[in-house]
Structure formats: C-alpha cells, structure tokens
Length: 329
Image 1 (spheres, one colour):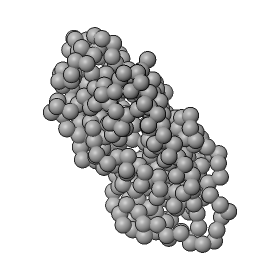
Image 2: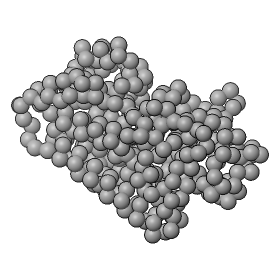
Image 3: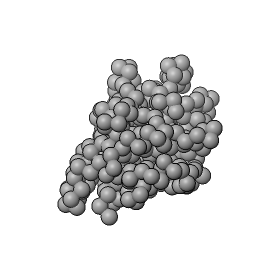
Image 4: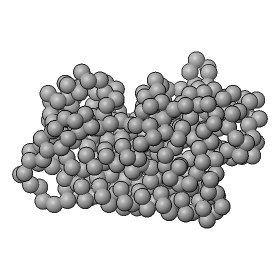
C-alpha cells in the first residue's frame, strides 16, 4: 500500500462551524485591498515583504493549502491536487488550482508559470528547493510540525498565512471556533462518562507483505487534540516513542499487545485513494490482531475518510466531531 503521508519518520486541525471555512467562499482579505506593503517573518526567521495582501498563492504542502482554503483564499497552485482531494476532502479545494507536482519535489518551472504573489512552503522541503522558490516569488516557510507543541504550531501557521493574505480577522474567528469545538467535545465526552478513556490512534500500511503500524503518540497533533478532549494516551507506557517532529512511532501487530485491555482504537483510512484497510481487512484473519482485547470487544473505530491527520484547524475540527461521535455512541 502506498500512502501519501508526510515523510517525517521516513515513512505526513471544518465541519459545522464557521470552520465551514471548509470550502469557504468568503473574501480573502478583511478589508479593501491596500497598496501598503506587508512584511512578515517566517518560521526560519526570514523577513518577507509583499506589495500587499497576497491573492495568487501557491502551497507546497497540504496543511498550508488547507489553511488557505479555511481563510477563504483559493490557492493558485497545489502540490498533488488529486492526493489532497482524497486525503483532505473535509476542507475541499475551490477554484481551479494548477498541480505543481509532488509535495516533496514541487516543479519550480510550473510554479514560475503561475507567477504567484506568494509561495508558502514548509521546513520539510530541502533548503536548496526553498532557495529556488525564493528566486521565483516571495516565499514564506512555516514549521512543519513540533512534537508536543502541535496545536501551537498550527496556530502560528494559520496566523502567518493570514498576515500575508490580509485575513487575520478570519484567522481569529477560525481559531476561536476550533477552541470552542474542542471545549464542547470535551464536555460531551465527560457527559457521556467517557472522560479519561484510553485512546490509541494509529494508521498502518503494507510493505513487502509486512504490516507496519504507526502510533500517533501524545506528541502528535491528534495526540494533543485527544489530550485536550480529556482523553488518555494509550500509547504511554508501551515503550513506543514518537519522533521529534510529528510524534509518530513505529511498531508491528505484536506491539499492539502492549496496549491496555480497555483501549479504544481509532484510525483513518482512505477508500477514495484505493488504500488497503489495514485494520478492517488486512489484519482480519491475523491471530494476534483478533486476540487483542479491544478487537474482541469491538472497540476499533474507523473514522471518516478525508480528515488529514497532519492538517490545520479545518481538519482538526472534523477530527473532533468524528472522534467524539465514535467514543460516545
């Protein structure tokens, strides 16, 4: 199975709110376009000056594309348009963005042909690629992820993109909506008597006929959202550690035996991308998998497709809805 996932461990936060910023058609800027220049400082400490709020924007990674859409800015260029539409469909693309190639290796020629006002890249790109991008158009680089500070990171990313596109008021509204969604979800979980529920989120893939499972530890974005919802991290105490960027670990089916018996197991797969359902199908006849207490008790929950596990406020809003529904049903 080939997953279009972030490469942080070697192998990548809408729904009912004003985070219907998912596909919002709201004006990109908070006020009338101004001729005043805008200077922002990106995650690498580089000061970038724009002639005004950027309108024609290229995004090299799905999380920044999602943020653009959430802020009402239809991106002019997107890396792997098809993949985005499959994996981040809760925040759909608007307009007719040009596909600029893969997320790891965007086509600088294609980007140049768009003549963008702004390019938004991430620290996952090689420095040499970022140098090339800066020769094409003003380029801001955002931090891809930071284990243990994921919500802070996606807030900073949203704010930086909003500064550059003149949508800071919209960003404030979006972030407040996510905070409210998490608070409401926490209350709903508590009211259902589920506070402190042990939750393990993971995804999996098959390589050379072997199943590899990626735990999303407490340091991951989803792990941090789960913590904010008042849930307990079932991966803690298993000896499985997440990486310093995305908080992702690695294990096999036997590693799942270390999870507590009362674990609720959550995962996301993608039918649109023709992915194998590792936990629903591939492991269905595996003796170790079938013997796990949470499998025997039917405490395995496949959440909605199209929620990007490394996204921004839009994706995390959708995740909260899906996780709360699964745990309180």
